[in-house]
Image (cartoon, rainbow, N blue to C red; front, side, top):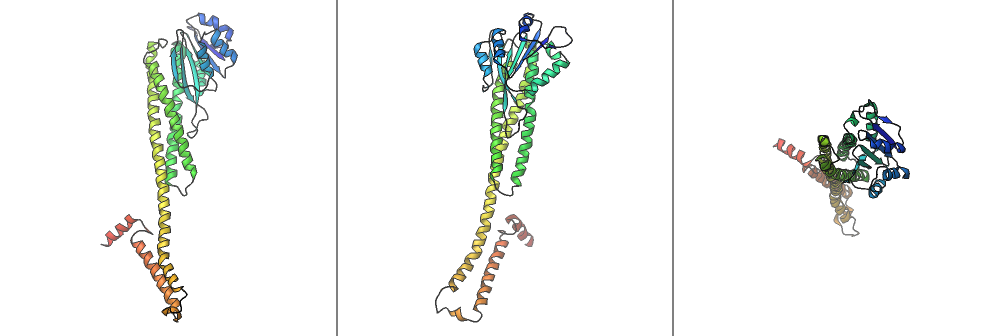
Length: 339
C-alpha cells in the first residue's frame, strides 16, 4: 500500500504514510489523498472497511478479479471498475487487468492485483509536480483514467500492423497449413474481447462524463468527456479491425480454394491427356489373335507416334485455350492481338 498526500499550498506531494495516519489525514478536507493498493492483503481490505467505511459488498467486489466494468454511487463514495491492458500484451493474446477504484470527497483509492504501467506513470508525475493533485481528487482520478485509456492506443497500433502483415502472408501463401488459420482465430478472439471491454467501458465513462454522479466536480466534466472521446475512437477502430479480420479469413479461404482448384486443374489435365493413351494401350494390349496390326513390322512405332501425337495435340489445345501455361485473360489478349 502506498499513500500520497497533497496538502493545500504545499510545493510537493508527500508520501511514506502508514494506514494509522489515514484517520488524521482524512479529517482535513483540504488534503488530497491517494491510496494505491497493489496486490492487497487482508489487512489492506480491513483498512477499506474500518477507515474508509466502504460497504462490505464493495470490498468483496474489489477482491474478485473477473468483474465487468461498472460504476456505483454510494452515500460517501463513488465505486467503479475499469480495465487496463497488460504490459506483456500481444495482438494474438490480448488480455486486460481489472482496476477497482473508489472516489471520495478528498481521496481516491486504486485497488488492483497486478501492476499498472499507467498508475506507475501517474505516481512519477505527481512526485515531480503536484499539479495533478491541486485540482482535487476528481482531477487526480481523471489523470489515472486518462493514462489507462491512452495505453490502449499502442495495442491498437499493434493490431493494425499485425493484420497488415497477416494479409501479406495470406496472399504470399506457398503452402496450406493451419498456422495462419490459427493466427486469424486468435486475432479474432482478441479483437472481440477488446470490443466487448471497450464497449462496456464506454457506458461507464459516458455516465461519469455527463454529470450523473455528484462526486465528480462539474468543472472536471470536460476532461472526462475527452477520455470518453478517446475511447469512442478506439472502439470504432476495434470494430473496423473485426471487419478486417473477417475479410482476412474470407481471403484465406479463397486463396486456399484457388490453390485447390489449381491443383485439381493440373490433375484433370494429366488425366485428360492420359485417358486416350490408356485407351490405345488397352486396345492393343488385348489378348486376341486376330488383331490386324499385331504382327506388323512397324506397329509398335506407329502406336507410339499416334500416342505422342494425341498427347501433343491435347497439350497444344489446352495451351491455346489458356488452361495451361498462361491465364485465360492473357490468352484472350494474345488472340485479340493476332486478330
